[in-house]
Image (cartoon, rainbow, N blue to C red):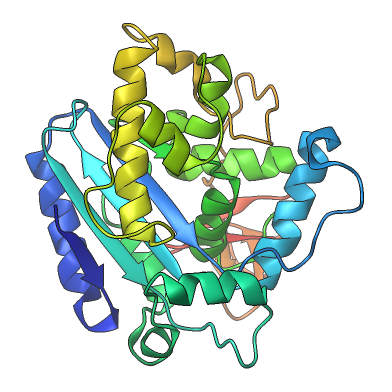
Length: 308
């Protein structure tokens, strides 16, 4: 199994490969992803983590994601049985350990695992360009894809930060609306799912080992390798613990952010535009129209989503 390394100079080529992979796979596909970032820089209050509410966990995640920069993102695609699989590892520029906020122990761990931060700073991917290509890749807003993570709140947080080019929403429900907008309703978090699996607990490596999934490429805390292990573990869990389509009941529940989203609707995007000269959002018709005051996310011609 080869993990395809992606840098700024081959970014467009590899997104073309992603498009080809989506065309080659059956109609129903799994997409697993994982992120590496500079660690937790703004720790929670002294309360035990397990006692924090979903809203409190979200605000803690938001503070950390807003304050730090993504380092790597891994993406693994496959058919529902894992017979055909493709893996990418995207290396981002922007993070500088001499200047940017980070957890020293986390950075040392990433460097021990082979992540070259100097190379990323010089040859890494621009987040804005990655966001544009991702938006137009066919991966997002695709009802044929089921998204899989392991303890994925931070993973979705960094991706949504890239796609919106903004800090995360202040409200958990607004964040989940963005998850639905970009990724749909088929979003799964293995860390939450194993609560209903006898004998399964712990981190990704332990869960994978327990169900008999071996790491076949790369190392732990390398985003490409971890995304592949997440994907293969999900396929094994589905076969061992969730017969038929029983696993579907866990959709749109992220570990530590477990809220009842019900029939949560994605943000609407019709009838509004971003007026560059005004640098604000107005109802379609220009700067003389009344400013739309509600929290709303709208598409613009560059393929990005903006918010007020």
